[in-house]
Amino acid sequence: MEYAFEVMTNYGYKIGNIDVTLILERPKVASFKPAMKENIVKLLQTTPGRVNIKARTHERMDSVGELRSLSCHVVLTLERA
View 1 (tube, rainbow, N blue to C red):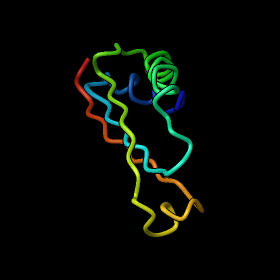
View 2: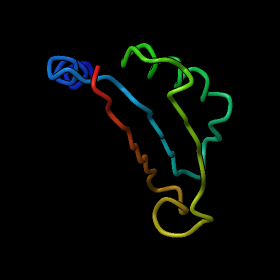
View 3: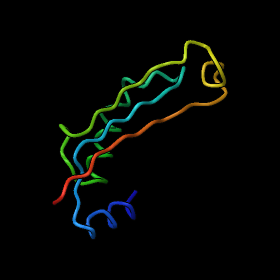
View 4: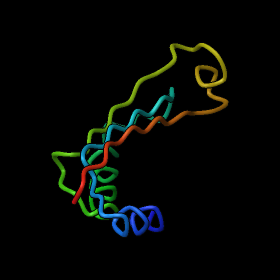
């Protein structure tokens, strides 16, 4: 992530918004979300208002729901600095 941040800034961009979706049955991540957000804010030198983290389950469907895997989707926008 640090290398990607360096490339982004070298091309004259900054973080617009970051949306993280964790898909897993366990562990429940509510207590971890503030620390995760803080790490993302520090790594990407942005503000907490630009970072959103949410979690959901797959309701016991597929490998995620069967506790054999987890998934993470991240969408972010870039703005000219």
